[in-house]
Image 1 (cartoon, rainbow, N blue to C red):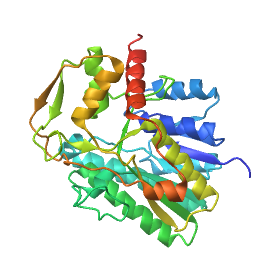
Image 2: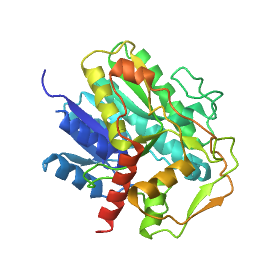
Image 3: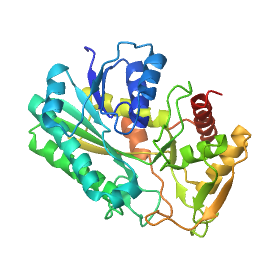
Image 4: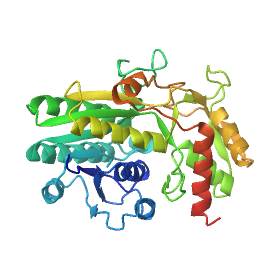
Length: 343
């Protein structure tokens, strides 16, 4: 089989950079496209170092620009596209809903228009466990009902899922789609050359932990200690970023090798293990020998009490399994923070 080319939109960001590494190491050709609105070139340069691919194509593209996206599809022999180019901060989406709807919907519509025009393109959409809302039961399977979103960000994920399903259905076999519903990606590449690099104050827990540990932040706030969970803090399914990235390789391979059972498929990408916020903080301190300055704070609006995946379908259908331990993940996250600080 000839080498397949995968376009990674938002490919210079946290998840996109790790996915690019795994695709390249699995033998795919990769085109990284980003407008650098939410990242700098650090991780893109890290991808080149890890893979030894100094010639890795980089296209600076705003995916809301339909003509620019179509030009990109015309320039490269794209077999599959993985779409990450979206805004992702829940709180910001509540404050700026129009910005989120415009960017997240328009960028995906541009990708689908270009893919449809080209034909025979596989579309992998980066979805989220937010589509399950506050679930009635855990763990959640792919058949767990979606709930109304608690934020405009979450709503864009639900809407894009529906848009992909409808477009694939109407394409007459010209497009195939996979929706990967991520749980909580954390950590960094074991090389410490790429990792999560938030601009300004982090929205995610682990960068806030590492930045507090290194002294960039004064104190970590743990929002709520009165939830109906074993230790009173929220429970989540924290998945190592490298495990998550590998799931994309399995999904793309499933598409390009014609192994899909339906024209649009859904997979949960999680570990199946609930870990509370308090457990994560304690594990970080223990594995890295670092003491964190933290305090309890009031609950945050929109936070779900507990959610974790049943990853059976991804395990059985794609052959993908999460293998990295929470200790390995938190060690890698700290190594990345130390690398950024030049330590």
